[in-house]
Length: 436
Ligand SMILES: Nc1ncnc2c1ncn2[C@@H]1O[C@H](COP(=O)(O)OP(=O)(O)OP(=O)(O)O)[C@@H](O)[C@H]1O
Ligand SMILES: [Mg+2]
Image 1: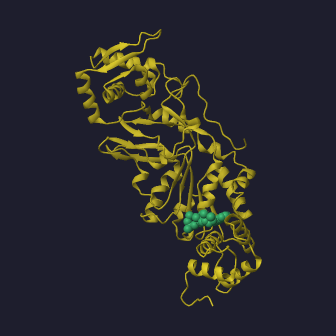
Image 2: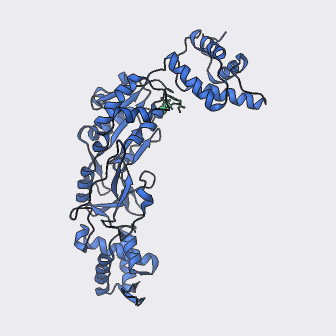
Image 3: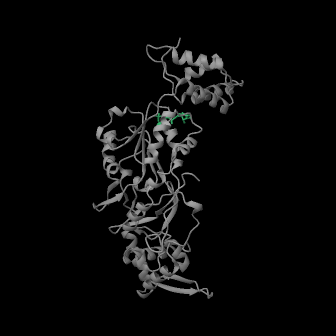
């Protein structure tokens, strides 16, 4: 398929290759021992393969770790199923319970073994979103926006912008389709990437995989038998869309004082995919605060994040960033604008585009289109009152007409009466203006 980009290849050595020994996991033994104890403590007793599955490590690696625990009398073998390849059942000892509680006091993370920061850095680099963007061609974009009415000038500007993988600002008046366009183009960034469930940095844990943004490929059928390091989930390139709810806090590592784990920042979750900041300027934060926060990651494709210990860490920022705003870009900081090479204005529709939109919406809502009614609408509610056309108006007005007709138990129509009623509901009377 055109625009498809393959996921990074797994070689016999490197961060994605199947770990054969405890040392291949690249994290400290202390962390591993803590994790096996917590897994075992959570169930009391477990079969070896289930422990391996929970930790997403191959069975021999889990068995090596369990042997280490056994030597320290932290766990015992309760028995085996006497199969050709016996499955052992493990139980936690009193000493093991004490140690598990100490481990839980350090952090409550129980799950796949974290990957090292070093491996994370390498994989982010190898599966850069730039590769997926660079294969986007004109016909892909035209297909993606097929259902929309978008002026050719927008497509001409947006295409190369997407292909570059560099930050994009969509701006223009409300209702002309900035969000809608963005929602339709995110599917152009194809392919899959590897996302770690968790990452260890400076002895701290960062949870990276998030079901809200990371969609497993092929339903995520994988376990300890997978022919690679199963601590990485194979996911579709993520799309992180945030709007007015965006806070500065979610752009940093969020430390949970109860579990004592960090949640990755939104940028980290968007790595390898798209970060779409919708309605820029409508956040609770001041636009300047948000702009300042973005200047560094936009410039150097690297982000500085603080662990709860106060230590600053450097994390790559590799996402296609799209901002959308109905603020006048002239009011935005020049230093910020300079770092967004592609500024795409989503203009008001022309009368012809408005007409196309209107006709389409009528067809989809079961309202018969009539030229006479349409001309009445344009003359009375746009030309006479000097109101600009907006791409959202056809949908909103035709919906009103359909609702009013349904309420009156009548067939919907573009009659003068219905148009007047819909416009009276929808448009605000402007002081000094007037509709008659
Ligand atoms: N170009 C278009 N083609 C088809 N429908 C459109 C187009 N633009 C807007 N619409 C319709 O109008 C609705 C509103 O558009 P959208 O929310 O994308 O506007 P916006 O520019 O993001 O506005 P705001 O600045 O208020 O966030 C869309 O959900 C869609 O139904
Ligand atoms: Mg919008």
